[in-house]
Length: 125
Image (cartoon, rainbow, N blue to C red; front, side, top):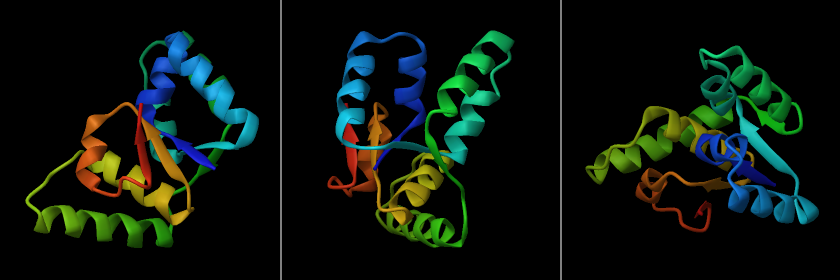
């Protein structure tokens, strides 16, 4: 499965032709997922029409939730990054923890994910 980061889903909702084409291609061979953190990031939008569009899109995806395994993985990533002197957005660490604990790789447009250093588990498009 491919876990879609918030940045990819935002661009999909904006109508980015490249992302739409890419996701349609991936969906032919793999199931698409996202995380409850991304769900939150999309649904907190102030405009009702954007929340509704996000909710409709989210209903087509498998949503993984933050659980004990996710917490273990996210905390491992956090410690690793901290030891390396790197800092990334806390939500990105949670998204990575959830995705990795579910054996998915992350599809993102957020270059901060490069800091995670697990290139076989993160694809930046």
